[in-house]
Image 1 (cartoon, rainbow, N blue to C red):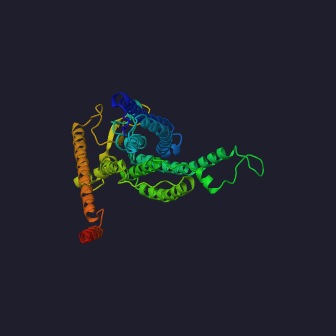
Image 2: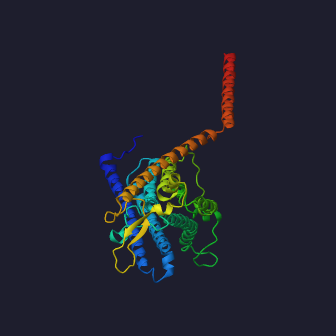
Image 3: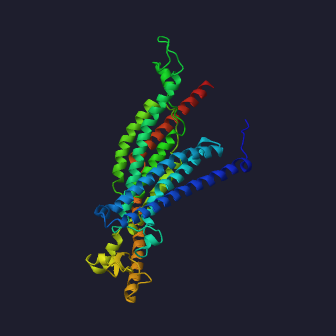
Length: 440
């Protein structure tokens, strides 16, 4: 039979161009929302900073309040864009006219994962690697509208952002997955029975339907029903692995979430969906490559978080050079002049490893020493990243050897089973051949 083929140039290419353009546009919108949240944090921090002298509470907890409210706003934007982009991704994939269900699933998976990755992880990557990196002296936060890390560093803000997004997403997803099938089934049954008249009462309304008819009203299990389950697990896998050094409680929250998720999914599939038709597949498809890429990315990300976001490497380097931690705090502080006659001080200090600002270099020797210290620290951080990655690769290679996918005993039993099966087939063929020869 001839199979209808969609022409690539006039049929598929325009839809592919439109689809790619809209995906990039949505990704750009997500980045724009992240920049808006950054502007919100900067504005609130400036406003709260002007109230610090009048409110001891704001002076102590202003930074935490700003980070928490910004994380909640970012979470709300993430959830809203998640729902909108899901429908857009399905529509764009259908317009691409994929030939098979496998091609449809791969195309939809790439779109959804790309958007979800930027949607959920962009703000976390910003706090981990970009926040506070462009501040060269105190006061830049109001002059150039960039964010400055608090005195304790950006590590606390990173943990707050990660905890809020991860826990909030899982809690919202659990509520939606639990209520949506129940409400959908109730609405479907109400529409089915509203025009049916009960023979006994003569009134319209809900009836005691027979079991087979009640089961007919359940939702159908489609080919993409498992897609969202895989997507949720992959995103959770990213939270647990990519940023585990910033939020060590992430695996615990994931374990608790999965404990309830298994029961919710079991009840949902049994009571709210028609019985799915089982299909045998060779693998989980493109999800395996995504999980493998996330695992490799997690090694690099955790190494860079430990090296560039925490004070682990500077403390170790300072201890090697000085033999103690007594002068560590002073080595991390930089003096900056105060050009305000109302303040009875000539300079203030803030955390910075680099050289003093260009307008305040009282001691050239000190400035040169701080620049050398900055580059020594940078080399030490890069060396830590390289060593960390090689150690992880070595450990994973050893685990692959020590814990194989198929145990040795099972592999031997499989070979024995294959050998016995071949022997039985050969004996049966030999017996049939002898019978044929005897008849001849």
